Image (cartoon, rainbow, N blue to C red):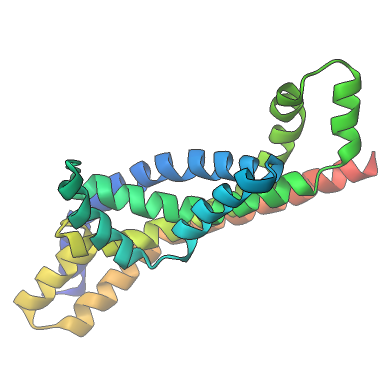
Length: 219
């Protein structure tokens, strides 16, 4: 097989990779925002629970989580497809890391803005929604892009659940062609083709965010 044929064969699994990535983001973004906000504002036992939840998803090996949820949930009467389990585990793992970006972004904001909002009669929730969160999201968007790249690369693990993603297709092609070096080099190139444009987009967002912060400091 030529290298182009190998590459095209690998991309036959792109659909599964894309689906897991999109579904994973639907888990990652809400979890990151909610967990980061709760960790920033909660105290006492509530903060401990939030932190423990975040650390569970951040610190546990993804492979172990995939196997644990895929094989243990049916024992509790919860039957999820391999795609659902893969997206949930990868999304919450990335979301755990993203939550720290949310918390850090909120901590860097000027407390005077919060006090001014409260003095104007806004509730604490309204200050968060209209004053703090928009600024925090702008600051952490480049980091979220980087986390999305990590999610894309992490989808290679769902082949362990027999999903026919790009990595699974590479394994099949390698077994048929007896050319593991060429096939896995092709897999590396395939992921690079997907991730590199996202990386460039993230760098541009980071530069834009830096310019925006610089302009705001001038005022």
